[in-house]
Length: 168
Image (cartoon, rainbow, N blue to C red; front, side, top):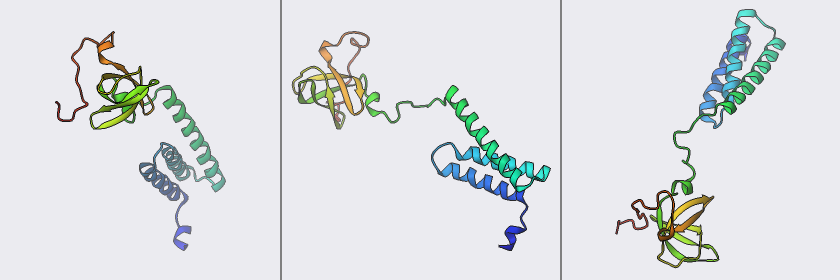
C-alpha cells in the first residue's frame, strides 16, 4: 500500500468522484451524483489551495449537503415530466376502452375481459356478456359502466371492442 501513500489527495478525491458518478449509473435513484460532484469539487479545491485533511472533509460534507438539498428543492419545484406518465399504471391506460363481462356483477363486483386479460371490476349489477366501458381504475380494480347506458362526452363515438383478440 505504499503507492496509496504517494497519491496526492486531489487524485483520491477525483477518483472517489468518478467512482460515485459511475455508481450513479448502476444504482437506482438520484443521490450519488451529488456526492460525486462534491468529491470532484473538493479535489479541485485541494489541488488549487493545498487544503488539510480536516478542511477537505468539511468542504466535502458541506458541498454534499448543499448540492443534495439544492437539487431536492429544484426537483420539487420543477419536477421532471415523464414522456409516458401512465407507464406503470395499466388500469389507467385502459380508461375509455370497452370490455365484456365474464363473471356477473353481484353487489357491484364482477370480472371483465379486455384483450387476453381478465380484470376484477366494480360497477352496477350486470349479466355475463354485457359490454362495458372502462371508466376508471382503483389499483388493479377497474370501474366500469354499461356501454348502452353511458352518456356524456365520448358516448356517441364509435366503439372499439378489444375483448376478442381475433377482432370478431
